[in-house]
Length: 366
Image 1 (tube, rainbow, N blue to C red):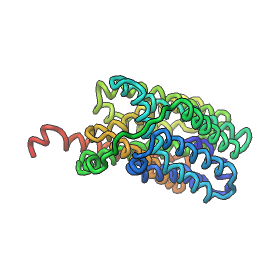
Image 2: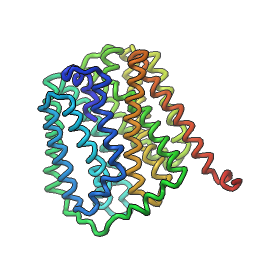
Image 3: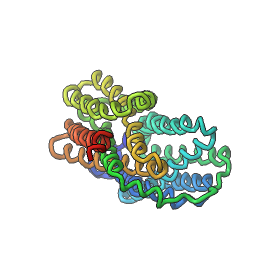
Image 4: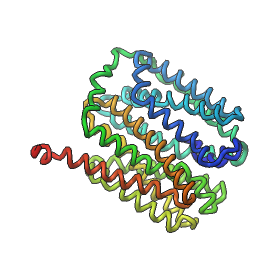
């Protein structure tokens, strides 16, 4: 996701407009959405450590290609290839984390992967934005390659061999798609994630053009947003444990309220800093909500449900980025949040339909 902070520079270097530069985010997310339920299963017979090393190797090569190409199409192709393998690494990260501790401690270990995603946002987006602004876009891409190389070496040295003892049954898991709750959950996650990332994809450009911030300040704002995500991740665990549905139902309302304030105060620097902090916390809670909303619809098939979560979340990124781009083109960058508000409103409908249809009283009446 580090490229989010570099979209204006990508647009300048490759001579495309900002909405086309957004394709490096949306195409990457679309590739993840396509491969989420299937690619992890295709690699299911391979030793998990070997698979992780293979995927990291592709990440390294992809970043090197991105750093050296002057062709926008090649840049997009590199992103797509990495996106196709992204779900493989994420699903294995959950598996390796869970297997590294006792069964009782596995949920805590897996939750750290979620915090890791937010921590990656904290470092990846602002650091690469800063590197690109102070040196060059190519150096920022080389930073991606370097980080992947470090993880490759760490995996090689510290992750034990993890051969697969039995083949994963795909047929039994795919049957959860017969449940209406699953389809409503998928729609809800697409909309909720689209509401967040459709706007966030253009945050750097928004802060530059509307709020009139310097690039150093923009980097700090991106860092602030990512740090707030971690706070939201930690808060979401407690909220979902005690008040699951209330937390899910409140999320789109809270996000919509933040976006309304964006419209009113988006041109003012200090209020925007506080608003981005609040937005980051809400979005961090939303990330956990998305995973919970889908896996709670199919507790009997957690692996497949996690694949569907990745697919749905990244379809949300793709559609959200595209729809918000339409608002930018049609009425201006300052109104990009209207796309997020529309997605939030529709997500409310899917949340309450699922709640109503799967309420015990409704099921008894049927």
